[in-house]
Amino acid sequence: MGFNFSENGFNQLLESLNQDYQIYAPVRKKNKDSFSANDLITYDLIKSLEEIELTVKSKYSAKEIVFPIRETLFHFVEGEQFIASDTDDKYIIFLRPCDRNAFKRLDKIFLENGPEEDIYYKRLRENVKFFVIECTSGFDSCFCVSMESNTVEAEDYAAFLRFEENGVSCEVNDQDLAVEFSSQAEEIKFEPQFIEKNKVEVKLPDREKLTNEVFEHQLWTEYSQRCIACGRCNTSCPTCSCFTVKDVLYDENKKSGERFRRWAGCHIDGFTEMAGGHNFREDYGDRMRYKTMHKIYDFGERFDFDMCVGCGRCDDVCPEYISFSKCINKLSTIIEEGV
Image 1 (cartoon, one colour):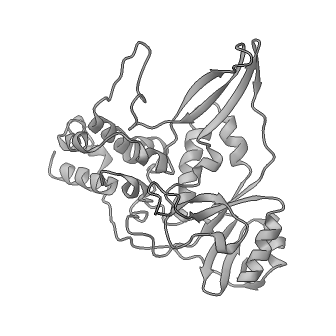
Image 2 (image 1 turned 30 degrees about the vertical axis):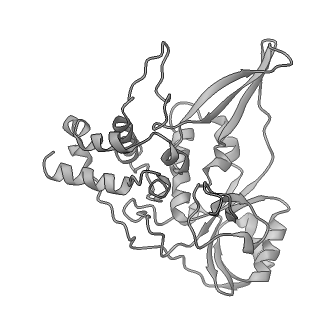
């Protein structure tokens, strides 16, 4: 079912939806980036069409809405445990096809990665409706077409939106929202469009040829010299899902406290530290190899599609200008040349 909105009509829709949903979208925060003179493009709550940033890629993805940076798991008091209280909040997230596909990867990790589902992820994830932003040109560092994450199926979104000069055209698949949309707009025929070619193209290596010789190749020593283990690639990535767990005691009562989880990443110092102080993958090149193989090999071997969605954020944020897309292409070339 397709609809066409004027700018004013779409703002009226958002105003109506805001009564029941927290609405998140990419926004521009003036002078809030790493350098004070630069704007930060990130996800935040919005109330109007004018607040949505559509011309620049967001530095961070929307994953923190469903997988918070820091999340309390449970509280403990005098030997008793209490699961952290749930929320009745419902969410709408505006995002591009690659980021919608990133949530498919997170769903696999948190909901289909063993005998039990992650209840903390699940209870937030169940309250999300996705509004996919049509993306037909991409950005300079994107390679979503190579990763087959440039398109989305109709069942993967509540609404698909095309932002035009004088308004918004869209398709609605969620019957709970159809009445809301129809009351604010005229009905039209609508066909979603997707990007078909990126400026960056990646050739994935043949998984069957990823042998031990590849793991030990000198390619990885390049990253030992360049990577500084800042973890920006991990925190900006929409599919990185690693976390660490910590208990804290409250000052008021040392027999009470909470257990929380917090984002962690394979590039960050201390990620592989074990009991007794033993660390493996201390070499930064080994960490790059581990991440690369996870994104384009290990995850795919288990779930039949690769973990990386080709959003290019890791390339964008790296202070050492390390390109993940170039790393994949180098790996493919090495394999084709027989290691």
